[in-house]
Amino acid sequence: MTRNNSRDRALKTYRLASLISLLVITPLGFASKLYRGPLDLWFNNYAGGLLYEIFWILLIVLFWPKASPLRVSLGVFLVTCFLECLQLWHPPFLEAIRSTFMGRALLGTTFIWWDFPYYIIGCTLGWLWLLYVKRQVRRNILG
Image (cartoon, rainbow, N blue to C red):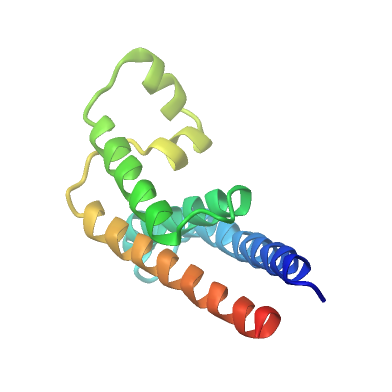
């Protein structure tokens, strides 16, 4: 196999791993928002934040697999911090978006300082997961 074919195969495998990870993380994220039971407040408010960060990291890498995992993770963290601060603003057009489940899930409704540590943890876990996947792909395909 030529070097270019190996790289193409590695890129496709990395994207497939990102897609599979997304297929796992996405329902977990929605489930965390709907969960009722022990520690439901933590799952609804904070576990969802962790998974939200990982979701966006994986989605970006799925479409731009050559992007640096660190840059993607930092970018997602910065955008999410912006969105968190946007929750302090309540113009009618944002309130209309937030009135839907998807709007609440994507934009949030209430500014909470305690979300920031979970964003950091989520971005760190997403970054570490991508590093692990890349390492496995390199080891198995590129040798």
